Image (cartoon, rainbow, N blue to C red; front, side, top):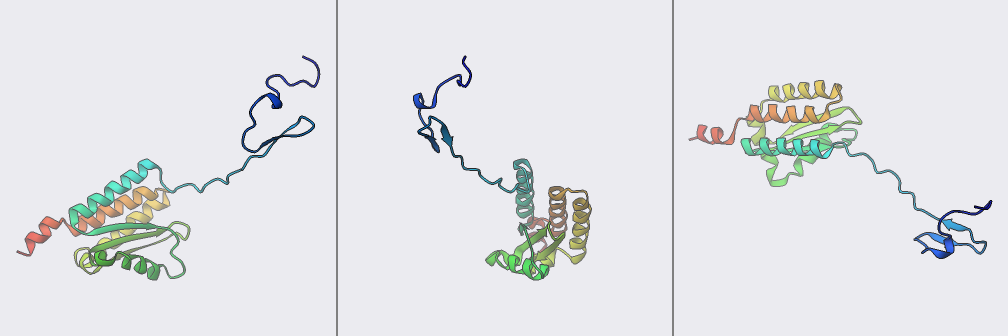
Length: 166
C-alpha cells in the first residue's frame, strides 16, 4: 500500500449516501444531522406498567376514578391541581387526582365530592406522608403506588359501598 492511499472502496466507485457529496478533488464530504437527546422519560416501561396496574386496580375496586399528573404545577399548586381535577369532567365527583411536581418538590391530592365522602382527610394525610417518605428516598413510582393503595383502601370497595346503602 502506497502512502496516501485509502484501503477499501473509493468514493467514486460506491453509492453516495444521503448527505454525502464527492468534491472535485476526490474528497468525500459528509453532512450528518445531529439529533438532540430526547429528555429521559420519568419511568421505565416496567414502572409504567406497575403504575397503570395500580391505577386500574384502584379505580376498579373502588368505583372511583383515580388519576396521576406528573409535571409542573406553577405558582399556586393547589389551584393548578384543582383545575386538572376539574378536567375529569363528568368523572370529577368520583375523581381522585394525585398531582406531583418533582421539580418543585410539591404535590397535591384532590378529591371530588363523592371521593371526599369516602376518603377522609386523615387518609389523604397518611398517603401524603407515605409519598414524602418514598420521594425522599428517590422512589417516585413506589410512592405513587403506595399512595394509590392507601387511598383505595380508605375508600373501600364499590361492592361494599353499594351494599351499605341498601
